[in-house]
Image 1 (cartoon, rainbow, N blue to C red):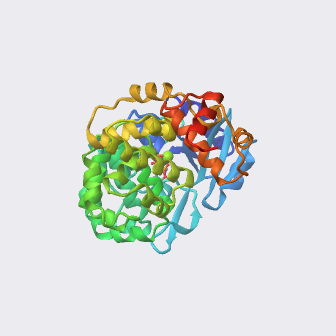
Image 2 (image 1 turned 180 degrees about the vertical axis):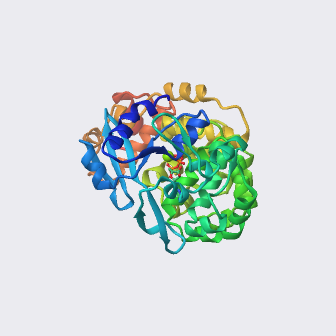
Image 3 (image 1 turned 135 degrees about the vertical axis):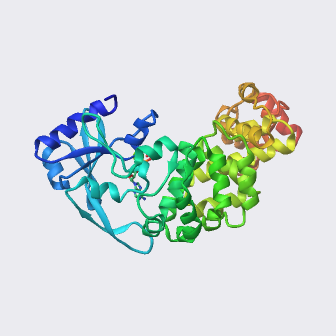
Length: 398
Ligand code: ATP
Ligand code: MG
């Protein structure tokens, strides 16, 4: 057994010492067998949430109604979930109620794909009731039991299947694939936030181009927010080399591929329920990319108004959509060479303007400061109090 499982074995031992069973389950076991980095460790147990809370000093209720308690042990957190079945599914979404059971097999049976239905005990012995190891060896995504049933129970699983194509580079097993084609419309019943979480993982996965093409082939996109009419845009997106883009840059590339302007991006991304901050960043990046494209280079003014981070993101996205070599060094150098990096570095303030002018305070001050700022950035004016005063007089702005 290796880390991070080693650190988590005391959790399993403590549960076993209290007379219950407990296993590592889900993505962590899958990724361990695939020799991939493991991010979060999930533990499944026969103990009820109340029983789990009795065993450990520090726990946090993070989803008691679903049977999940977070256990904090030596500064690490572990999600401990009671074995459960999900008998009652409502409206093609997650189950209304969960039923706790004492048996591991029943718990593994309700999981989405065979590769995700593996469990491991504290000694590293793999428990594989549903042929998950074969699926891993064959790099296949296959539902546990009838694909049609599993997708009608919870339609999000279709989206998860496609995102695993992207993150793991696996293929869809035939019956699973056919069932996605047949049930894809049910995705419209799913809470957008859940779809978005999977779609963002898809965008960040290594085989994203294959996953996006699959979304087109299986017509999944017809049931996703705002993408219905963007078949060509998605094909375009799949043709890009999208390595090393972060999530905001990825959304920007997608929207540009779909011919969505910075202004339209707001309505588009709101439908995906993205946080406002992320939407704003994407809008800035798109605006900067289009400006960079139109101007043919980074102008001082645009570097200044974009800010370094947005400009770097825009350069990355620009290089992706134009298949040109990216030149982050020039962006950094260009930014470093700007006479000022922000308005606070200007040698004059509104107070100076009022002192120099007979005009009363008003909107003209903001406009004048902006004009000074741009002239300084473009090196048409030195950032010096006296020089600025002369310049304002010359242009009769004061
Ligand atoms: P990742 O490595 O990206 O976290 P994961 O497989 O661990 O992938 P999670 O969303 O963390 O994905 O889910 C943990 C486990 O819970 C899965 O491996 C699977 O066994 C089960 N699971 C998650 N979502 C579903 C679902 N919608 N239907 C059935 N089982 C699910
Ligand atoms: Mg996980």
